[in-house]
Image 1 (cartoon, rainbow, N blue to C red):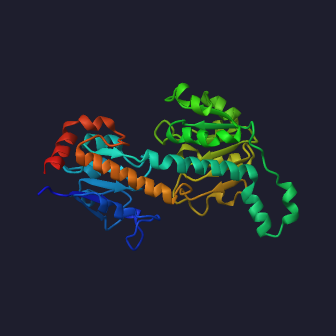
Image 2: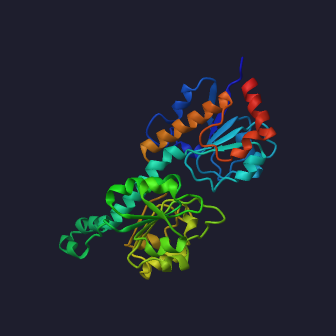
Length: 345
């Protein structure tokens, strides 16, 4: 009898009672795949340990770090499936060297994250948070002092016009804004359907009324937005970060907001998470904040599970899964040996 495919799930994906943290079928979707056994790691560690992943063919992971140390001596693990698209917590070269595929769920997060960015744009432009406070605090008479900002012909700029950035422009088309983007890996033709003009970094900083960050965090993008960049932005502009906190120098952002280099910001990600109660951003009226979860929708998690299920099924059939990030691993002898052990057992 063919042995089952053993799948582990990191502990942060479930609550105290072992239920998946989001609405919907969650873990029970794995029951629909023939020949699968799964279990949740009994403990949560900031960094995955060799003991946790021992004996598994695949692991579904949310927030823990993955390093070469975790993979040392492991000759069975075939793949890691991350809920989401960010992989700054994963040492991708270490996985590749160990013959482990890394799969992400691009399709599942594209629309929810783009919609969250649009929500920030609409909330900031209408002064929604300020007006909510006015009415709760009995300050109705002050409403005329807090007028909003129309979006027609304003400039929407995006840094990183790939998967999510492209979707932001798609959702924004009915707003009749001007679209500019900065991305060295994207061609002008690939964004022609959403009326984007590709420009350099300086131009997107200087001309954007709303600037959304949609690029991944890596060595090149760490503190990509610091004091020099923030000073280039319009005093009337807004910065939106739904990507990763360290892409923005948070201390410089605090100064920019407090000294009116920019008008405001929408921030879902922070340099330190959870962000400490002493973070000055928490006391500012010109910024809307969320705890790295604005795109956590029921459809987000259902979509992620469906993507991961499709990836598991593809690997069980010996075919390349959608969302494979380190594509070079597929032809490595170590990965192929483990794949064939799974297929032939």
